Image (cartoon, rainbow, N blue to C red; front, side, top):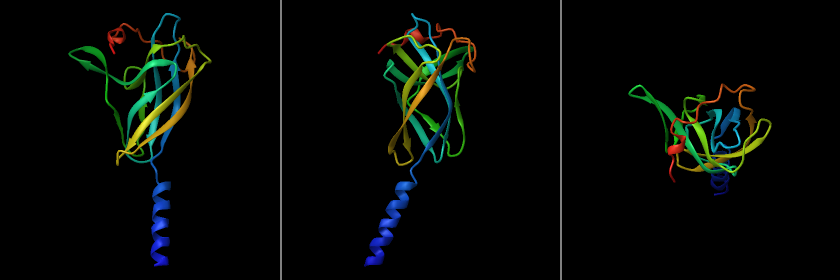
Length: 161
């Protein structure tokens, strides 16, 4: 009986240590001008096991959504998606012109050198949620490693909540 209990405890301990993790690399948020109310957060995500990015949160924005940009009939459109599937060991790049985290209803201007708190919420294959807290650097408009700023007349103003 003792052996059975010890084996069971070891199995539970191993399962707890085997939790899915997501490696986040090169995260950055595009800086804004004073009147701008939306921007994007970009990064590379590599999960240890299959996972899904299902939500993001930040105190600097009233609304945070996961978005994709895709061509539809020769027009680039941006839309919210319910989640983003991440394959085990494969890096998914969130970048301008593709998948990204959209920060909307900004509460303040985001300037180069600032840091933005960002919480990513993931689900594993068993639908168990786990979070990752980030401190993401803001890249000044036209500076750093960020590409040139996107024009924000591509549908950002059409968001109604």
